[in-house]
Length: 99
Image (cartoon, rainbow, N blue to C red):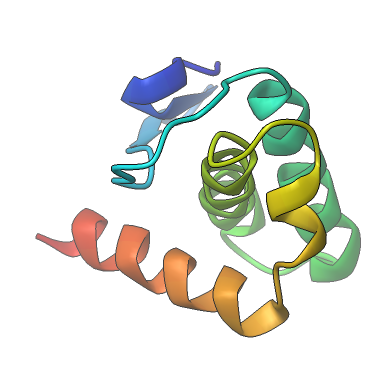
């Protein structure tokens, strides 16, 4: 379940797992953030295979991609994102979850 600026929650029969949104100070336009979240989530799942915890990590990557989407109008920001940019933001969110 996407919760916009409040992150996302994954609900399974085993319980719930919530992921915060990436803390960005630059919100220009939220249009497309949900689609970017879905793309990041599904993209991660497509490359993860059957790894344990893939759904949980996938919504982290969805949150990361949604955070890039809000920083510019249209797809400008996402077009310039590198794999390193994505991994850096994923580490920030994963560190937030470990607290």
